Image 1: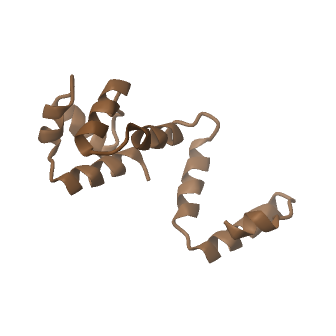
Image 2 (image 1 turned 90 degrees about the vertical axis):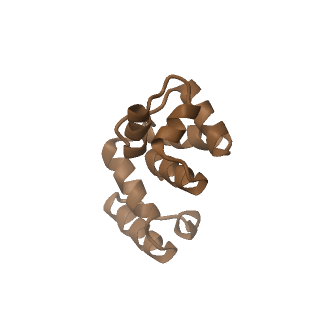
Length: 115
């Protein structure tokens, strides 16, 4: 799940608006927080820690998502493919994996099929 979606869901669960979040986050105005919630900007390290405290989640939960989002080893296409894969049922994931492996000239292993 993208970090903006995670932030929106957590804020909604706490009943907090962008303005209320901004009041709890150092150096972040309501416009900045609204941009985070729309996925237009990313919070900085200190702001992530403050967000985690405010939203009642471990900072690692937000940082892990951010690290995944910014993984330099993956291309934008790989990120989209992974997001689409995660939206599939396990049966669909297995079928897609078999097709992808066949296209790449690889044979899927038993461990790959069970994911």
